[in-house]
Image 1: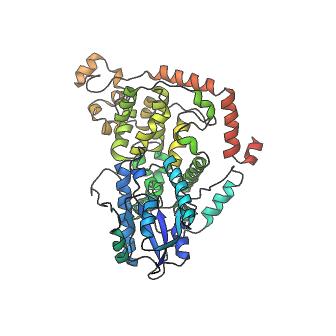
Image 2: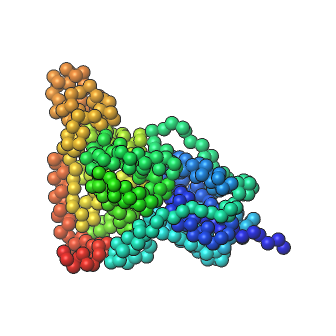
Image 3: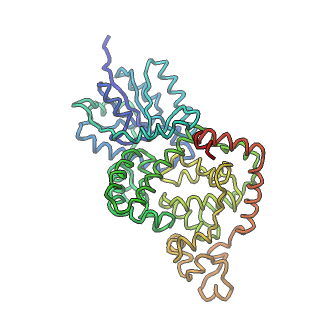
Length: 493
């Protein structure tokens, strides 16, 4: 009987990088021949939270990794099947006793997949090593020691990728393995409106941000057009793991020592910690994908309007800033944070639609879709946590403040391009004579507002503030604070 050669497998998921990757680092320390594996899993490719823009970003990331791996005469085995089928096939040629991956804070289908994979590994005498990703801790009951744990994670120098000679399976060996699988086509369009995937491109964005663009970070962070250059734009590269939060934090920390723009860098670094905080919350409250974290808000009932939702999705609400944001997001996959909050506020408060109805469209459109950010933020902006300030954004007020010349609006809503700035912000204020003067027909060239801002704002505010006094909401608010806030902090408040 021929003995199958042993290998260690690294199962790559949302950690598409070689550097500062604990799963790869620990696998290489095991000192066995190592295979890097990525599975385009049907359960995710068919999941409504994902779209082609995500898969293309991942393909571009893998192509970029393979270029880096050429120096080691290796590549990533990229297959189209679920993880259990992949390991079963690999075991026909190799003996696998250890598999490494990061601890994924994903959606419910990946949670169930991981439970099944854990059982599979146990039944097949495989040790599955799950490693910390970006400082998120698994199994916490509260946040008492969370800051210390995260501080310790950030304090470690980013891990180097230093495989020994011939430790990675060779390109030739991987090509032999490819004959066992359905292999996805990794080619993507060269020119698209989306940011390109891959560590190389991610590092380029980060370099230009640290070299120059960060100086206006705080000044432009809320501006829908200016934020496109003054913000770092690295969120997709963190979401899909081309860059680690820790390595970005370390670079910012060292730059702050000599930079003239320390406050901007401090604000940027705080948002890196903020990202870890929200993913940690989702890790500890996985039901947030489908239901409000605060159970008291489960009794909130809203009538579903597919017409309202379609108008919102396609940027046809009659509110220029909302429409510009949605069209921009649909086409480019990016929107700055304040405008993300604004479009969710409009959907949940002014259109009075359940936040759950917005989840899949937004997740499909956000190139940087990260479940641990996505669901907590949706609920916070919808006002259904019971612990956060209720914010109902006025789209007209925000457009006047953050896009005063209507530059962003006219770029994404070209129907309004020929109007003077005040009317581009509020075309519904135009008289019949003014419409004739501009050759513009409200209701034909651009929609009339589909709801009244003041009436809908008052209804949402009154309903949510009343519900915040509900006994269950109050009890849940205390539970949430106990679980997600350090007890020391609570005792002081």
